[in-house]
Structure formats: C-alpha cells, structure tokens
Image (cartoon, rainbow, N blue to C red):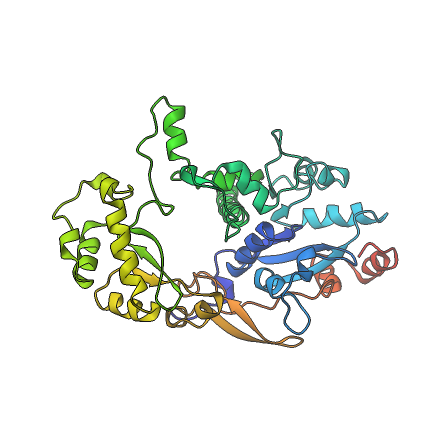
Length: 402
C-alpha cells in the first residue's frame, strides 16, 4: 500500500482531549492519533501519568509509556489551581472528543464531568473509562485489570482453577471498546449533530468477550444443565500445550478432523484418526479417547525438539506452533514479514522499539508516529493553537495552573 498523506486520514481535524492514564485510555487515544486525530494528553502538573515510571526503561523513559503514548502532546494542569476552571472550560469548548478515567466523583468535583462538559460543548464526544462503570455496586472500586477479570468469572473458565492471567484483557478490551464507541459517536455527530456521554467499563468490555468462558453458566441460567461444556482450556488433548524434548513448549491446535488426521499420519499413528467425527467433538474433551490422544501427542513432543517439531508441522500446514518467549517473538520472521515492529530513533532514548498499528498497510493510519511526549513539553504550543494569547499562558504558568 502506498503511503497516505496525514490530511487524508479518517480523523484528520478531530481534536482529542485525553485526561486518561495507565492503559485503556492512553491505548485508545494512541489509536485515535494513529487514525489522524490531534491528541492532547492532559497530565497532572509535576507528576504526570504514573505509567511514566513503569519498568523497564530505555535510557530514561518507560518502555511501556512510550508504547502507548506515541503521537500525542503533553499539557500539564493542576486542577486545584485557582485558574484551572477557566482553562479547562476553554479546552473543552475547543475539543471534539474528551476521554477521562477519573474516579466516579472526581471529575464532577472539578467541573469536567460529562454533564458539565456537554453544557459547555453540546457536540462533544465524552468518554468515561473506568473499571466497573459509572453505576452499580462496584463503581467506586478502582479498576485494575486483575480484579476486574476476577469479577467477570473469566479467570476460571469451564470451572478450571483460577490462575494469574498472562495478558491484561480487561484493560485492552476497554481501550478497544472506547475507540469503537468514539468512532461511532463521531459518525452519529456528523449525521445528526449530537454529542455523547459514553460510559466505557473494563468489566463490561471484558464481559462482552465471555461467550465461550461463560457458556455453561449461560445455559444453566436459562434452565439447561450446561453439559457437556465447551472445552478450550486444556481439557481437550488436541487443543493444549505440550513440553518438548529440549524442555520448551508447543501449542497444539488440532480441532478440525482433517488436521488431526494429517497430524496422526505425520507422527506415524494413523489409527488414532477416525474417518469422521461428529461436529460437536471439535471443542469437547473427546471422552474415552482423551487419555489415548493426550499420550500420543505428549510422546511425540517429548521425543523431539521444539523447533524441529515446528518445521515438520509447517511443511504439512499443521497448526502446531512453538510457544515463543517475548524475545523470540520480537525477532520472529513472521513479525518481520508483517512489518509489525519498527526501530525508531529518539533524541533522548537512542533507538526505541515501536509496535506498529496493525492497520499500517491499509492507508488508514499515520505512516510514522511521533515519540511519546515529555511531561509538559507542549504546554505553550498547545494553548497557542487553541487560541490563548501569550499573556494568558504566562498567567497560567505563574499561578501554577500549567
């Protein structure tokens, strides 16, 4: 795909006032920036987004912070300063989208809640991103990913024992849902001139991903017995992880009969593959054949090194894939072929690594993403662009507002 000019991106001309921090909101606003929006990251004066201090670091700055705050400008504000309300009202008036992740009562205390913001700018798209939403008995509890996942029931799918998640699913689900909601609300505003107050919850967003993990519970709630349960968490021997001879791991995903048959032939055990299987067997435990299947796969894997297995399976297009470490994944040939990682020169950090937007080949996102901003580095330029004159900016600086 040829490069596209920034002025032809989908969100060119849209200004986003981003008061969020940590992960869901910043990841969402980085996506909006990639799509062409002007994103102003509003941070607490002198402190900034706490994720600026997340390990590990490059020379100075957090690898994590750089990875979710590219393409933005940093504006610092002390909401407790006497001139803060004057400043925030003007910022809201001049923006198209506002994202915030304050506690339920904090935004209202400072006059930047949805109701106040929409009075100032009726066409504003205002998105609150929180752990459990603006209503409900859990709404006042801080929304960190682990506790949100725990509340969804998805940490123990299929009645398996709970385990620490390996991925911040609730955080990213909320970031993705917020992005979708903002895009939909902007489309509606284009057509009907309406602003919006969006209540985006990590809990709700992850809950929406529960079609498989909550399946048996849904059946029981409807009056059925929920059995047999869908098995996608290790109980199905053909959809599981296995150790290899060199003490590494492969992921086996032989759900479909044709791939199971190809695998059985490849390992010299064709008698294990039935000519036909009932479609319901695909995500089952395979009943009386469970242990026989599991032993055959385990024996094969234990007799070969991980990468030898991968090469043998790839020749036959059989979905048995190495479980890579993060370092291996970063340097993998597939990541390279898909252009998903880029090394970027940074004035303060030396080279940093950018995980590229997966839409980079579509012409929908920026060809290059500016590095994450230094705290408060853009105070003057942002305010000038929003119509503040030099004397006003100097007053805000003198009073400690910015």
